[in-house]
Image 1 (tube, protein in one colour):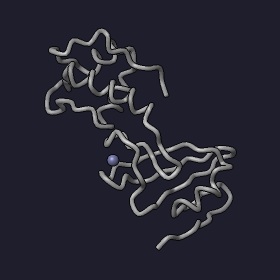
Image 2 (cartoon, helix red, strand yellow):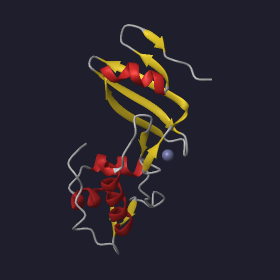
Image 3 (cartoon, rainbow, N blue to C red):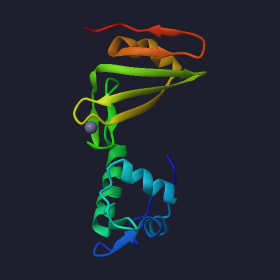
Image 4 (spheres, rainbow, N blue to C red):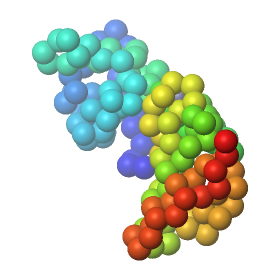
Length: 147
Ligand SMILES: [Zn+2]
């Protein structure tokens, strides 16, 4: 994760452009755009896009508590639900790159794409938990299928 966002300077009654929101929270504009994609409510019909101060504070606070949310081995953290969620139908894509593996699944509740990085060594255990499709650089293996 990039450095954490500050909320101390945000005035809840103000509206901020993406650039202003980035300046005041100490993150990049790219991060703010990623927040909007990840569920931060913004007035995207306006030019420029505006974000309400109180919405911004609530979003950053929710992100902070998200980091404290316990995510089980059979769960992902869904940015939209802001909670631990199981993948839809237990389907998980696993992309192995050297020692690391990246899991991708769809939230069983809201259909948002969720990611989770894991160690390569966890993959055999995970294939018992999920219907895992493993994509290795060298080979493609279909894991345990749960009908
Ligand atoms: Zn969700």
